[in-house]
Image 1 (cartoon, rainbow, N blue to C red):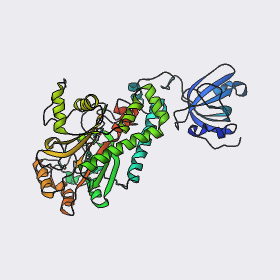
Image 2 (cartoon, protein in one colour; image 1 turned 30 degrees about the vertical axis):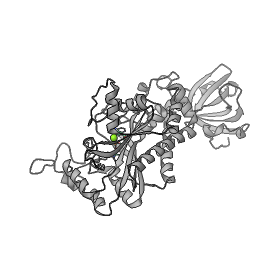
Image 3 (cartoon, protein in one colour; image 1 turned 180 degrees about the vertical axis):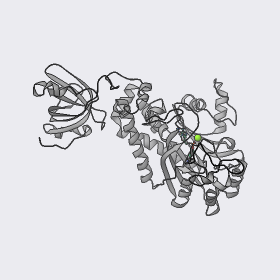
Image 4 (cartoon, rainbow, N blue to C red; image 1 turned 90 degrees about the vertical axis):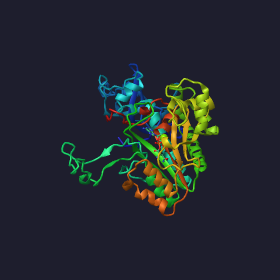
Length: 465
Ligand code: 4AD
Ligand code: MG
């Protein structure tokens, strides 16, 4: 048997190939038929679509077809013909079937019937083989590509910031420690504290919560940079919007003020969503039909409308005057909860909102202080269904003001000297933000739990796979 190069199913629905002999490889989704003919729906992940394999049982013996079960992996060669059946455009009339691997029907968990998303989370090693997760993971890929493309096309440089760090960017103290010390036999200093000088890096280190501080160093040399990497937060938030390990995109731009920063955030988000609409039509239509009939309308709406821009103080006023019953209290100075953010976006403005100028007490140390001395030039982008999707700010470029804030917050200076140096040597106004990648994927796919938009979620008490 001469070997034929494999064709992906995404490429096979090309009428130019009709009539030729093709080779397809993939996993069996379903098998049905009668005593004369078997129909196998084969999927190789390249597209949501299956290719139908038609097996004339007169040409194959029964023993050979026994291992062709749901979940089995096959290599099929045969003639590609236009299909007469409903719902598909082409099918392969099998001449030869090689079974790479069967899947025991009594054990393979993804049999034909639909499964709950909760159940699929327990089999995250197999769920990419379902239509839903195939669609989500392909959309996730296209969004990642769109992000790199956007920044590349706009003259930004991709900067890789460290994952292991000795500084706490957000100052929230939610860091995972990194150590090679023997936890059962910790070295102690004379005062009885853990002696980190004996640790791998000679000091206490953690997984990063954000690449921003190093990103700023890049921006103050290259002009405009972005990071796109994993970040880690040990906050014990068991919500549908928090992960302990998530991916963040952080552009940082020299000479941008808060307004430029908002323009960038809005343009960038719209570009990514438009990219998904243009490149993921099959997968989006599927998710729209299965989970949220309004999904595509919502995406178009965000792309086609201006975001509202509003100071925090005015946002608080709207929330107070709404007399809506919130679980968490609303007052000037309160950190907004997702219920407040969603009220502003979904009920009040019915549009994405960029909230600015938050009280300095509820924001990180590096944000530029406003002239009122009370608020900082922060900006959070709030989305329907998601709440906060982006957090960012103009940065404090003044050495003395930054130093004062670091001291007020008791941030250890020995960890910060290099960051302060940017303000000592050629400081400049600059701004940036962080987009939570999974929150964007959540919004675009219409899924409701962040655990369903990352292949292998890491959450409190859960690090399986
Ligand atoms: O608002 P955050 O904490 O901002 C920063 O880390 C800044 N250093 C960013 C910057 O200015 N360069 O996080 C940014 C975004 C949030 O808006 C949210 O979308 C996402 O990261 N995020 C999370 N996503 C999933 N799980 C979590 N636990 C998240 N925490 C934040
Ligand atoms: Mg934030």
